[in-house]
Image 1: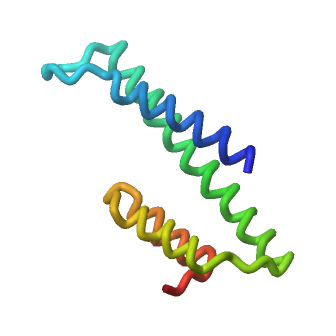
Image 2: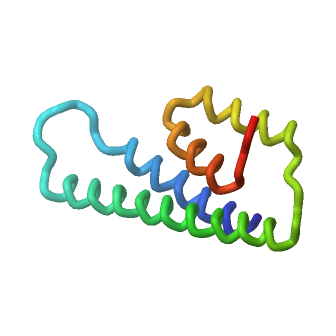
Image 3: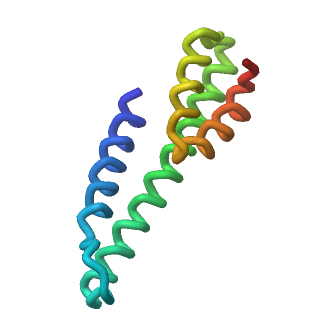
Length: 101
């Protein structure tokens, strides 16, 4: 879905900016603090946009009576479980699409 691809790309660059914040320790300068806040807010926006679009897509699939491939869904959920950071997303996705293994 192109809109989710664009949001994912934006999220990728926002995450890269987060990783670019220096990690040498010590207090951050005011400019670094402002940049960090900007990046975090960008990531929050990305997350909200992804959730909004995913909810719309799920509703559209249900309205059109589109059945999701259970094998592929299981593979995707297994991939998400292997990445601890994705676990909260996996839980939301399961609820959103009514996933049952």
